[in-house]
Image (cartoon, rainbow, N blue to C red; front, side, top):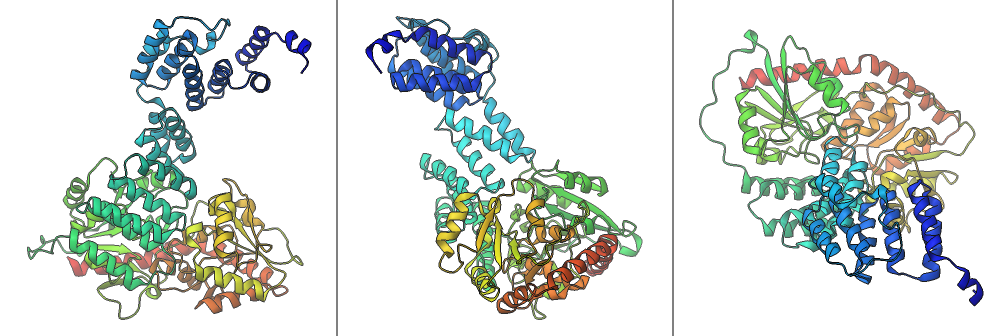
Length: 634
């Protein structure tokens, strides 16, 4: 720029225009002006201050604090820069910091020489301090988290971490909210920040282990869990996180998982006493008292397929007690609360108190609906608070060590000689989610077949990748389209390519962005592929409700049997493979002309019939099994 044009530049007028644009809400105009000023002047204190004001207008208090701090550090004796920090620190609930910067503002020796740098819309220190709220960002984050709005919680936790980078609560909240929101790689980054603040806190290490597991880094996760246990060896809940992570590992041998459970039980489950259990009236004279426990009430989080069966249990013979943690205001939880005879919120109860509360209800049977990959209350069952305690689709060889009397599932989930008590329910425990309506699928006849999967990143192990690769070899014109969000975003897409790029051809394995709604994704695929040994197959049943065919494979993991047994019971056995080789071959068979259309039509017909009577049928089977078990335990 020439010297004459430089001399023509009117800095006060330019700043006034930017301030006016901010006051009027013309944010893009203001940002363009600030960007131009930064290019002209560089990173001066004035530019940083204006960036701080713009950040406030964008409701980004963390970035505002960062910018105002930069302005203050450049010129610590300027009143406006200290005053801005005192105001914004009051707004974010930082009492000590707000007072500190107000003192600096009072002691400042000069002004910026530019009018309007503390605009009226920003307020003043007296007003902000008078209405100061303790940790408003954290309170907003915690409230959103409790309601299951993990995106909103993550946003508020992130803002708090920007304002207070040394806040362990903010980084922990970010890690948990990211994990719940299906962003495992972001959760790892937050958990690593948390651990860096205090590496010797066992709970930080345990959370990092859970985040690493959902990013598919199971070796690293288990190493971190071992460190956590070494830091606090007497904490049963912390040690349980090791088992939860191990249970999620694709292809883990059940004997290894049972060994970990027995090790946990030896440390934390008291020996079964010889004291006789209280006598109970014969069931012919009363109703069976059944309790169910879960901390997973959100849509797609494990109970969508179980509650339709449980709520139809014959109340003339069974009295239902629900013990709930987690998001208990979710629609599914509200529905269960309305159907139950008794409801107890466990969120504010410690383990010992919860065990006493449950024990006082004199239950005949208590069932953990969450199983080993989701159980959040392991020591509750270790206290043996009911006459008979069962783990739904639990690990038969490990359940007794955890304090359970046995496991509950379908006949195919357990070998005939499975150890311990096994309560087998013909047809299984699951039914189609009753809150979904089948969709009319688009006509894709003649187009190359598109395979899809609802797999999250951590569920895709080497065996699944190999089976998918064999399928793509067998069907040269097919493609496999995965949901980007379930992979954990672009980081998951890149990590999948890095890990399995030599097996899965990158030009035929694609990732689609579905956002929060899966409907568009599901309508664009012809056949969903359930990952091998999937310990959380409930969402696949939800997809079937919408009319989307899904292929699964039998495995040793008991809860994986839930989907296979449902398909076979409903008459869709052709969608169940007995091993990985048959799985790839069966999927390839659906690419034949007319085959996928025929299967889709059969799925639609079966779904309509199952929505009408499937839940009632399975409720009758489950009720009969429970009643017989309760009678023998009385």
